[in-house]
Length: 313
Length: 188
Image (tube, rainbow over all chains, first blue to last red; front, top):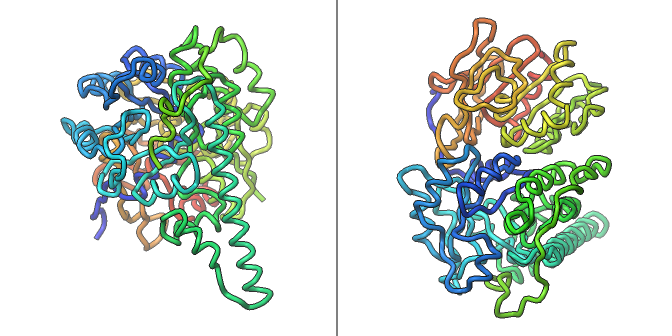
């Protein structure tokens, strides 16, 4: 039967969109003006929020998903995919923007930048047609979010600070923990071949520690990477910050406050896009790394109660 | 052995490179005009066409690709790559290479919720259907008589060739099926 059986919302098409965004920059935007600056700079997608993370941090109070009418005007103003953040565990914020007027958001971020509504349960993301991205500080968090259906992971960093330290810490932790699984797998194979003992008990125990299926742990151990793209986020403020995160193995970059709290957002946004593409060509990143004026000043002292990264586990 | 350049500005170029290597060719990531010097074919991957276009223009790589195409370089574009190769993008004034006599409409099926996969029979690939993955895919709205249509989904053109150009609006690089990359390497 030719041309029958169109399947939507499958695992392949969800991760497919995440794959298409690789090597690119996703920019947080709160207004149509921000969104146009982002598209003009070469962003691969924009993330619609009520306020950019630095302003969420400054204003305090409950941070919710952006007003539907704002998301809609942003969706109409650009041709690139549009994402929006929802609160952790808030099924209804997610359902509304998935369905809204059949326009449908392209990607949903179940995000610790907003105030979580469910301190125990994340959204069952397998149940949605639209792909989800979630934050993670370590491999266990990343695997749990994938097990719940996330099609993309982003390291959390510390959002809205302009300080890339925590983003570096989180991608390093994930790398180390992947290396641990790879080592366990290769030792298991060594024992299988040399001593004819067939066991991967260390990986089984790791799966229990991470509270995820063994198959997910085994995939990472065999392939040396996550089964979905892993972007970097949280505190990226300069072209060099973006290039550093790519160099450490990120598949792409999320940046928001770093652009719109800088002196020249339109110039800096372009430079961050160029640095993300050319991170492995030092001769080419020189141009991206100069003449953009003052970056976001940023902040380094975040007390535990103001920390966003610890809001989900 | 053939050297196939994979445009590595943005998008899923690693997936294309992996599949081309499985077909038995060498691959080279293309980011600068110099990278284009020693290739026998070029693949423009899926990704965001506005992003890829801007960086193709700024880096001068776009101009060099057009020049090399004039000297006979075979080029295959998937999705955003197909958009880059089109002479006309309906409703968008964005940078493109303008090599193939087609008009394309971006995101023609709708937003991500309308992205889909489907098994489709493609004559040039033999008797087994091909699992085509469409991600916010474009549609070829019209093609000149010089364009050979190789496959359709309903009435929409999803695979076509003209001279040394091949396009698909879907993503063979997201599957394990080598047939379309083999077709490009053998025939174009």
